[in-house]
Length: 278
Image (tube, rainbow, N blue to C red; front, top):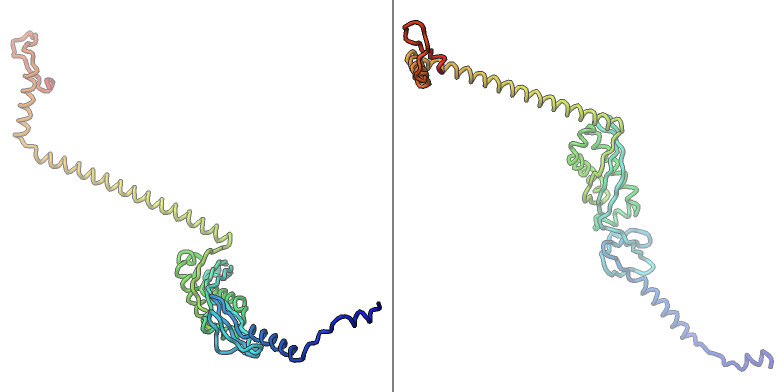
């Protein structure tokens, strides 16, 4: 049995043109249905492009209808984003300062289509990072290196105000800014250390001087008090008081006498030495 006979024995399938057309229509409808709806995830907005042009409408979170093959939807993140960088600038006293800045920001959801139209999705590199550097440089130049440390909160507030204004131009909202670190040159760090040591020594010397002055004043007051006491005592000494003290001394001497008279060659009455009897 040759091959031609085998082919003739296989039943032939007949496909009508209507069935083919129906299948094509079903496939087209399926693809159209797939391209007619779009889902915008949480924390995002949908930028609608119609034949490449940005439409004024912005899709919020959820399911949306779009014109298939005519409109495209670009998702854009409107959640809080973080940008951290090291910015080098010169202070008011011409010290080189490297500032580590952490910035939290988010896109204005209602203007995200305008941002996409003017900047695109690379807004971080094009807008945010340069704006941070410019704001840090502008504010750092207003303070000396020491003031950047002592007035850290004020510096942070001014940077936030300056940066917020710059980002608002491109429909971005600044949430928070944190200065995590100031870095200075080694020479400046050594100078600050020596200054602190000198201030501590000056403070100690001043405290010692104050202590000496207080002790001297205490001694003067003590001497004045003793002198005043002696003066008052002299004012109270009278002839009657002196006579009374002599009588008291003689009484004490008599009380101590044992009743024996001393052996003398003359007939005089023995003399009692009041001073020695005390």
